[in-house]
Image (cartoon, rainbow, N blue to C red; front, side):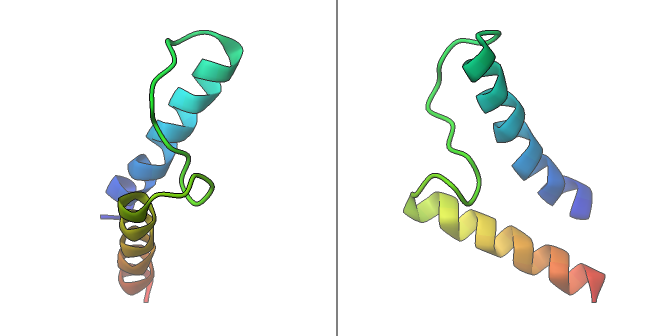
Length: 56
């Protein structure tokens, strides 16, 4: 479960870095906890809650 939540953070990060340096075409992928969006923030908060509950 933790690796799945980690993938939710790593995928957009890799895509955004690729867009900045020009390796991938520009898409509308938001950065976790930086870009504001209701569903994005809700999903990120839920993923952090899952990771914390598994860790506990």
